[in-house]
Length: 207
Image (cartoon, rainbow, N blue to C red):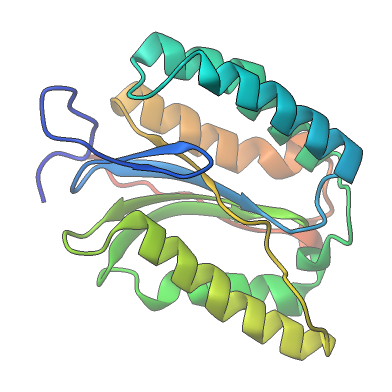
């Protein structure tokens, strides 16, 4: 793998569905995905409508300023709502969060290098560095599919566990990496979680 930080002068792969997802081989990426019931439906619908209008006037690819504007307008709001603890919060159960940690670690050093993660009651943040040949959508799909099956077995439940899609952000430099690690480390404290209601690992690798 080449250097771990986003290089605007190197080729970028952009996958677009609900959001533009940028990929660059060997680059660190910060990810967030959430439970299907983690946001109240009216709140989610209003956010989606506002975002759809914004995206129509800001087509990809985005520069750094546009990405920052999107994050401050939309992503930061979602983070605040998630930390408020909406929904069933099934990941609060140690057995369920353990399944997520097992899933994340399963292909570590094979499909990606797992730097940091925090498993919150209704969402997950992770920092990874992809291995060439393993695209991010496939990696996230495998995480969600495997963990949903195992957790639904624990709960004797059926139906979707995870909200469709995910948020991702390429890491631009060492300072950005440290900000993301700090966010992961502080997220449980910010949400005022009890020690047994989350799982946390923060990387220390110097790139």
